[in-house]
Length: 164
Image (tube, rainbow, N blue to C red; front, top):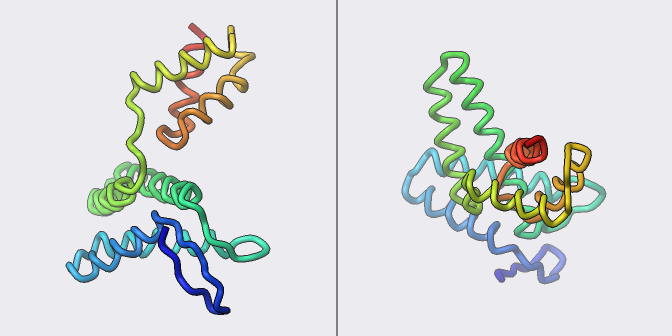
């Protein structure tokens, strides 16, 4: 894991994902890739803001950095949809392209078939029989999905299987 010397002379462990984002930003800047440079700067700013949020500053773990990346990717997706709905295709394309850059740092998303199989396993394991068990199923399913599918997709699949 990369390390760096903090201001007060203490050694701080920098998560690999954050280090990779910084390295890729440098590469994009050297290649004069404006889209990637702007997107990675925005992501690193969001990570830095998350690090100083709260009562005291801290380094984010790779899982926490991934959570920030998921949030930023979702923002880009929603903005692209809003721009497309408003007939602003150029801005929608830019937001989509930024979302694609961010998505490259996230784990691959589960396919609909894989998500359905995972939810079916959780339903069987929990013995869920109806919509009253949705919370129990959602808790276990979200734990197993671990960022590989949006909560809305998981909830829709759980609803579909519990109501069938």
